[in-house]
Length: 224
Image (cartoon, rainbow, N blue to C red):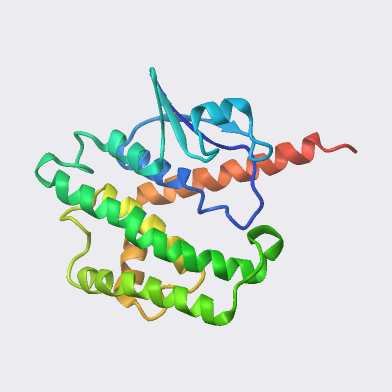
């Protein structure tokens, strides 16, 4: 049975490329697994969406009788028994994946949301003072510094490429888009290494094609 990936039907330009279904698409491409895409409205949320995902977020996957949300849980489920989550390194890979989704993403997302609020207060809310934004950046940098040291000495987080790298690189891509990796050459090289992988490029092409198709469908449905 082909796996179903559920994401939003349409979004404005600025979050495209960073919606978390990219993590799942990338993992599926690394594994060579086919999948199909279904959508839920981004606004207003549908009852079906709330039933699948109690927080109204994406991605969600459906596979046989299993419906699963949270990108980290999905990555672990998909990678089980594969080279992306090998038994001998399972604990180490899991450790670094949780570090990506908790320690690093928590700090970087806090700063990124503040930066975006400066440009788009109507969407992200009033921007905080510059001192608050700088304090958030310092907190993020405190997480990036040990990661920089580690990735200056090795290509991937837990031996060979794994779901820990899918998660961490996807987190770092968001911060990189706002200049967070300036001054962190090992992290910049790590993200470049990951995003050069054929599976990432295929996933990103399909991810962006989804939004382009959504634009066309939206225009076709608009009144003349």
